[in-house]
Image (cartoon, rainbow, N blue to C red):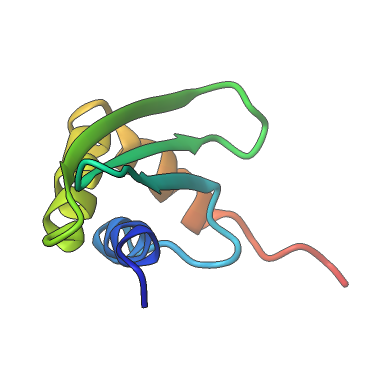
Amino acid sequence: MDAEVRAERALLAELHGGCSVPIGAYSKAHSDGTLTLSAQVSAIDGSRHVATHGTGTVQDPETLGRQVAEELLDQGAETILSAVRQRPPAAP
């Protein structure tokens, strides 16, 4: 598994994200050995979102994923995620 996927998965794990949770993440490995990760958490209706990005190394992508997740939480992502998790599931 490449560093980009590992960083994104670490972020999702830290935020307890799944298929029905509005979390976006995009990671990019660079030729100099750095790794960038951009992420956001949005309300279902789009009324609120928080976003951030960070830089780490391709050798330790999980730390970068956790750091970016923590920054999202510091910006209020947990309030958004809690509201999403309390919504009843959509009808098929």
